[in-house]
Length: 258
Image (cartoon, rainbow, N blue to C red):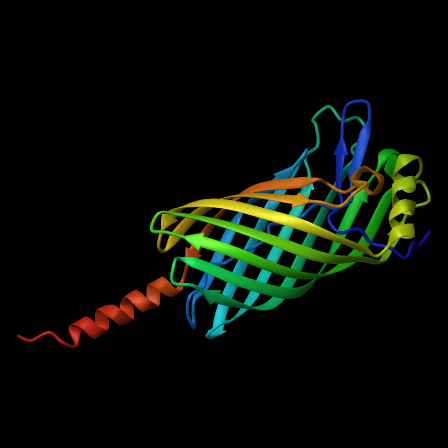
C-alpha cells in the first residue's frame, strides 16, 4: 500500500520485549565562525540519541564578504540490541544546502543567518518483516550567534523548520503502534517547529573540537515519534588557514634582504 508521506530521520529503537520507533531526530545546527571573504570551514563528527547513532559532515564557504554557502549531511541508523529477536532496524539520511549571511563584531562575536532546503530518504523494517520506504523534504531558517576566543568558543542557534512528508511506500503488514504513529504524522503533515542548538568547543586555529546538543521543542513528540534531542562531537578545520599561511610566508620572503 502506498502512503503519500515520508519520514525525516526514521530510526527504529527496539528492546528485548517491546519496540519504539522514532521518525525524526534533529541534526546539528551549524554556526561557522566566519570573518572575511574566502573563509572556508569543514567539519565531520559523530551524532546520536536514545539507541540510534551515526555521523554528520558540514562545509561552509564565504565567496563574498558577509555572504556564505553551507552544506550539511546527516546519516544515522538504529543501534540494535544483539538479543533482538525481531531483527528490526532502520536507517535514514538528510542532505541540505543553505545560503546566508554573517557579520563579525569587534569583540570576537559572529552573527549569522541561514535559510535552506534539504531532502532525504529513510528505510525501516518492523516486527514481522513489514517495511516502510519513505522520502521527505525540509525548509528552514536559522539565526545564530558564535563567540570565539584563542582557545575556546561557544555558539547558540535557533532553527525554524517546515518538515513535509512527500511520498513513500508502507507495507500492509505494518500495524499496531507503528501504523498509528504514521497515521498521526500523515494527518498533521506538514509540521512547523523550532529547534535549538548549543555547542561548546576548544582548540586553536586551524582545528577545533565541538561538543553539541540539539533540542526539538515541538509538543507531543511521542505522538509523532519525534526524538527530543541529539548529542554529538565534531572536529572542525579552518581550511583557509593553510593557503593564507602560505600567502603570509610568501609576502614575508619578498621583503628579505641579503
